[in-house]
Image (cartoon, rainbow, N blue to C red; front, side, top):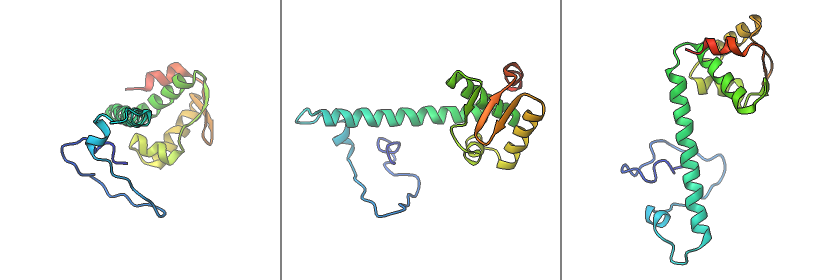
Length: 147
């Protein structure tokens, strides 16, 4: 944690972090991360590379979340998410990468509303599912539901 705030002019982490068990936290000043290592060691390069990778993943995730927030209807959000997974896996049957509570949080909807709309899609023959396993039965119908 903290990599998002590490290079911010704020210099403060905008949240509280609570450890579940005894934890040691290491603070690295900015200069130690971006400055050149006097030994020109591969460990320093790996640290910078890993940090950039983490920042990139978080930026992409935040971008995805904004895209889902811009979709007006709940059915549109669910359809877009299922189509994204369909495209990612290249298969019409796939496992959701998160449980229903996490998916509801990700889409910024309530869990009961998510379940209701998923059941509606199943009743209409657009998808079928069992727990986290999803099968898309009518891809074109799903595409038409995205706002």
